[in-house]
Amino acid sequence: MDERKRVIEYFQRNGVLIQSEAVDFLIGLGDALDNSRKFLEGFDEKPLNVVFEDVKNFFDGNSDSKPLAGARRSREIKLEIIEDVTGKSSCEGTLSDFTNLFKDRYERLYQLLKKRQEMRNAIPIKNAQRREGDVSVIGIVNEIRRGKNSHILIEIEDESDSATIYIPDDLIDIASTIVEDEVIGIVGKGGRGGLIIARNIIWPDIPVNKKKHYADEDSYIAFVSDIHIGSKTFLEKEWKKFIKWINGEVGSERQREVARNVKYIIMPGDIVDGVGIYPGQENDLEIEDIYGQYEALAKEMSGIPEDIKIIMQPGNHDAVRPALPQPAFGKEVQDIFSDMNIIFAGNPCYMQIGEVDVLSYHGQSLQDFSTRIGVNQNDPATIMKSMLQRRHMAPIYGDSTPLAPEKKDYLLIERLPDIFVTGHIHTTAIDKYRGIVLINASTWQSQTDYQKMMDFSPDPAKVPIVNLKNSHVSLMDFSTHTPLFPLEV
Ligand SMILES: [Fe+2]
Image (cartoon, rainbow, N blue to C red; front, side, top):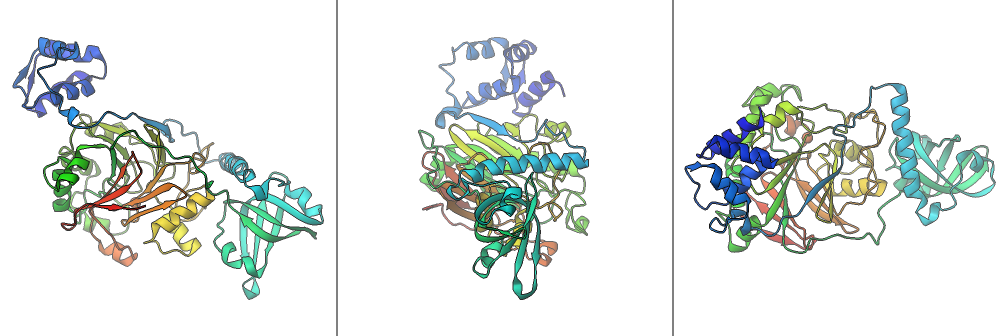
């Protein structure tokens, strides 16, 4: 659709006729849709028609008589996408692609591990094997072998060589949480026929003195994940309650004040239910056409106030490649939302809102981690802490989370976020780790038979909200009539 058509349709949808010269003026300004929105928001009551002079006067600053509806909210806070794979994918799936991915992973995690005091004197594995006495090495985990008497042997590798690490009894608990393809530090004793006996296992972790970032005034990000439109179990009634609240129509004075100051809604994936995602899904679908699902979502989202910016990311149910990292939605999907205030981002994605760093990731690997490190999948906050300690969201290659071999490892947590959000697990979790707010952002789908079989216990229709001024997290619950409650995290 061309820009002119989009502008005209936007006004039509709002019941406003726009003169052709007025459209020209808006296009001449650049970012015509955004400016159309700004213009219409300036009216308490929308006009029936708009002529050239109206838009000209408005944008020339003679708009005193038209109060901006947006002024009911606090100042604008800029959002910048810092990093995702969108437009940068390079992989062709060759062997050398994988070599590049692991090389990048090793080098960047090596630098993070070297900052740990225990790893300052780390030496290449080749030298460590020859050295009698204390050594420290940094390697990528090749293989984990469990021997008799529950002994564990771990093979790690760096550019110089590989070595077998013997795990003594007192480290077995911690060593059993090590996963393949992650990068770890080992402090131990070398010189025993190529074997290194571990004394300590080191992950890069989050520095305790991590700097936190805040906004100057109360302004909120709301997290709305796993909407799963298209499914028969989409919670339409609860969704409508959310739309009413975000428009300030329901709730206590305080709840409505929060709604008025929501600047951004982040949607970390599975925004539709998709098709052919799991066996027998067709029986659970209300809408069987994937584009029909996005169209239905656009309709449901049209109730969100236009001055709230939405960041939309894909998940494993969405119409982009399933392998991580996932790029933003393609043009076909984006066009369905063309008259909305949306930024399309990849998965995972680092973004900066004002000074606040947000890492938003759908969370496909939460289940792999759950099995490997022995934490219940319904406890995503503990798994997310474990990801932060490893500074990696999905290290294991060849498990159920598909990975695409990009030149750069986009699943690595190099930059320290202030907020780390996931979805996918359909539960609600709010926690903090070393000053980083952790959120798992619920779902808008009640339990399907398939989920019952997979031991998924959803905690749906909840919206976690972070105040950027102080990183306090609140939760709006649309599944019952529970009031907003501030959580001291
Ligand atoms: Fe998912």
